[in-house]
Amino acid sequence: MLVSAEQMLIKAREGKYAVGQFNINNLEWTKAILTTAQELNSPVILGVSEGAGKYMGGYETVVGMVNGMIKSMNITVPVALHLDHGSYEHALKVIEAGFSSVMFDGSHYAIEENVEKTMEIVRIAKEKGLSVEAEVGSIGGEEDGVIGTGEVADPQECAKIAGLGVTMLAAGIGNIHGKYPANWQGLNFDVLAKIQAVTNNIPLVLHGGTGIPEDMIKQAISLGVAKINVNTECQLVFAEATRKYIEAGKDLTGKGFDPRKLLQPGYEAIKATVKEKMELFGSVNQA
Image (tube, rainbow, N blue to C red; front, top):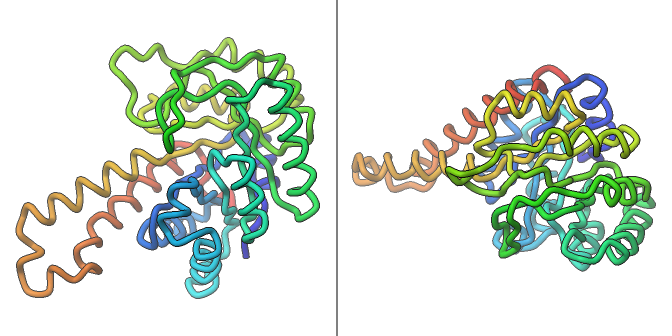
């Protein structure tokens, strides 16, 4: 059964570890992440972007697939199904479809409008027992056509949004979606410490977890980051493993063209990456 991310994140924040949000793009992704979480006895958050939701046939399809797997595969660790970077309209759609957690990204609005819309989403989501993530100061890079430059959030705006009853807060601290450029300045820990000081111990979220050095990840966790999002890294290893399989001509041997065989190396590569991240984030055996 799907759960809200609230309890797992409060526990993570207190225990000084982080729960990974791994974005799902299809059945292989979902199965790989759930299997690994169960094997490592780790709580997990499955992230779904608006684009991925559309790709997988709509939010109801995603809810059906995830609930079906939890039941059929006997997954007993806490699993939250979370909309990633949701617009106001799509936040309402996933609440209706049966997600257990939702992110409303109002970071591109003026702070007053972000506050107003976030309050409304909190009100509706809380009635149904969902956890809510809000964002202040856009995260760098590109996600579903939304481009940011690695901005740093204003701690006072963070305090304002954190006070609206949200479960968790994503604040830009120089992090970027996708691959990090060679001239990246690193995370801004001074700002993170200020945000933590004014947001009343709310679990903080680090977007763009791919490519941030391990020591920075650990420092971020020590400063209140309780949720770290990973997507690009799984996509890269999946593509690489699939490419190697085809380049080796394995799809031309026997039944190697069968999608179940063709996608197996990519599936294993995702599992390995998720395991590595859960170990780094410290969520192993925290279910």
